[in-house]
Length: 111
Length: 114
Image 1 (cartoon, rainbow over the protein chains, first blue to last red):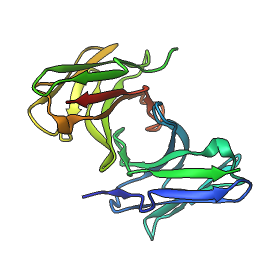
Image 2 (cartoon, rainbow over the protein chains, first blue to last red):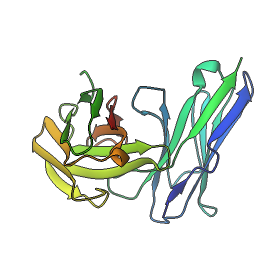
Image 3 (cartoon, each protein chain N blue to C red):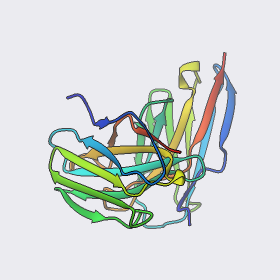
């Protein structure tokens, strides 16, 4: 039973346009959500997070939106750059330090 | 700090052999996690430790898998005997209570069992 789902395994976007990566979750106990970015042959690196008491968090080109009623979050990257090409993992936690990850979305930003 | 250090980076072994993966967490971090990444299942949590004590090992797939953390600066994940379906990238990550679940990952060990 996947508690965190990323239904799009891949996404291609033109440079300069917006990238929108989506994530759904089923566990209503999750109270903290994170996005990680992973390049080939490297470990995932933390990108941005949001607490369940907020519905939006912004950091430069990256914005995460949380819709608790729909159990849905999304990551917006504006404008997208070729260096953003990577696998993006959505993750969630419920009080503990344990993170539950989605299966990832491969983002390709085309020059 | 050099970050989370894992060794080896790559491991190729024959089915039935014992495999030991190693991890050195970031100094001062009190949580350590072992994850496995596969194409089918993405990143799965296998086990995690708090202050060197295993807290949740429900993700460990079988008794062939075991993990230890003898001290705050070292952990091992052992597979005995290994099977081809264990082939995956294994990640170690660590964090500290003051950081809200933002774990730091090592570069991973790519395990291939032939």
